[in-house]
Image (cartoon, rainbow over all chains, first blue to last red):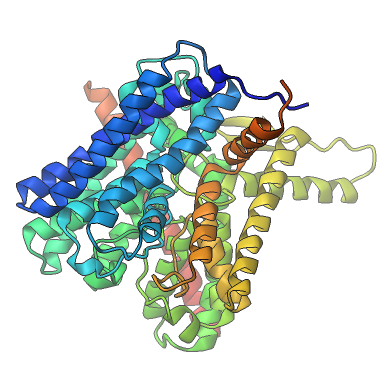
Length: 501
Length: 39
């Protein structure tokens, strides 16, 4: 029997939601300051409007819903899923006001794409977007990569019992440190350390490629934020192809791989056990998955014969593959080239890579390496069970920070989430086919949206059907949060209508 | 931040960079093998 929510339930959700809204309003201050310093006064007004709406909404909600009641699991999940929807609307305000998005739906699409670290974009004339708006696009990706609620937790909350419930709701089920707030701050510390190193490296690469100093470092910072947070927005419409620089491509590949590593693994490698990286199931599975999927893509590209030299084949093929595998979405080929130049085999290699994703508790989306690793181990265990004598006791274990014995309690949720993702990819593909797109193209774009990748084969353009835009927004949202908090929100909505008092 | 923490973090970052380059070089080796058999 589902119980009807009481007033206190709404107040608790509203109170914590208000903190997230206020944090988002404060974050809009960063591009506002940059716009002001660069003399971009129109963008200043766009961000001022966004901040005003956020502060009015946040403060009103805080006053109306003031409560000192503890957060339950249900509340934590609902706060998280609602936060992402509210954040999408609020951060779309300055984007829409810039005039570079033809409708508010398009601005919402890019906003959700940013927060979910997807990278699919409907922006028009990106190459002439103001510095302030460009910074905001990349900043929302950086915030989304860390987790919107984690941002609010890190800066606006001193510590409360419900923090872990919201932390889990944002698809981070592993605590790095015993305290969730400390875990959130460690995630920020890793990101800031790499932000400095990555921006300097990309800035120097940009200077070497002939860019002006300010632009080189501005692009460096923007591209770092979206590479490390495996997002995929870029300051130029041609993505990373714009730079025509091998150094730039190499640095972004390294940053993407670092972004796909579990933050818990970062912690252990940084604080002691360096060998953990070689032993960990996630890094091993990622390594194997990259090699297998790239083998498929390389075979396809060699068969297609469009890149006659091995070095060119590697440069083009591996970049798209690692961009897809880490869920980033940077491209060094044009979107249409996937289906005009590449053959089906090469595309399927990238498609599988996109569907698999990076590590859990990283900034990537999709099925994730820990689940693939656990399922592979379970397969091996079952094969051994058939081959060995019936009385033999088969013990399978894997290493993830510590040695873990494989049992059904681990295999079952891994299989359920994997199945949910696969169904989700195909559901989006069916939606694409209903709008008249061919199967493989639809599946490619749907997987890119649901796995929060951002590689596009050309379906995602401003003129695409509005219904498909909504489908992709839902896919990006639910895919990033790994379904559970979104399903809790739906269950809550059902309880409001049909719950018993 | 004391000296030992800084050294540990630097070595950690170096280890992660080595891992990233190991992935890249292994993929390059795959590419060479594919190119040899399917020129």
